Image (cartoon, rainbow, N blue to C red; front, side, top):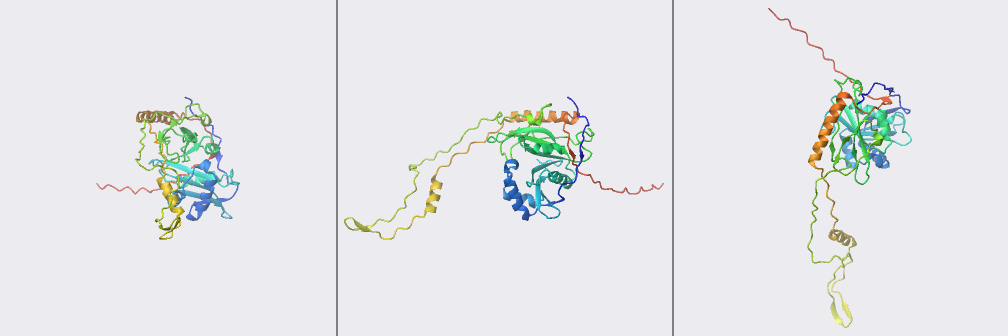
Length: 341
């Protein structure tokens, strides 16, 4: 395995083309955030409005705006704790308003995310679909493609797992002993996909563009449980006819109603029809065989031990240096006491 050599030609992050400021999002920003993510939902996925509001309340959303006009230009949704790991943060969504892209607004938001993170957070990661040009953005900031997974069954995409050390002295070409070890989850079963997926390391010598994944995997046999409803009534698929009270016969061919028949309530009829219509059973979710998951976990542990020990990672040369500037608290040592004697 060939080790990575320090050949980085990255430069410090220059000033954005538009003078911007970053701040925490407020509830007044919800229309902007919701509209922007709907416009790019194929690239971002989608946060329901209630979920976005919850992220705002927790301080997990940053907004970039024009320093002069206060016009919002983009946002970033992130957390400095991911999968119950204090050293790992995650970026969920990053989006810039069309017309202002390629102006270092996204890079400035990422740098601000690093600066605002907890002291113990040393790594940041993100998932990005392989067919998106956003992968080149993460690559330009020095993120490393470590692993991949198959996407949802419908879209059949491949997702790349990017990761980056965020402290200035902890790049992937730094000190091997003091560097924070890379890590990736060997399984995901939540998030936007909501399907059980195994995560695999990117093989050595394979570029992230050339990774191929299959959605199928060894799964446990699933028994379909369909409840059969016994009913003597035949479902004709027609709207039920309102019944009226029988009339009183006076003469042949003539009658009158004892009460005027009520007008049919079509809203009620529609609700009754929907309630009586049988629902199609949902397909059962396949569960991955635990024996296969155990092998995937061992593969992850062995591979990451090799990666963190010999730096056998894909050669990624970031275009810009985007790191967190570490600030240390200086504590004065108490004066030594003289020992009497």
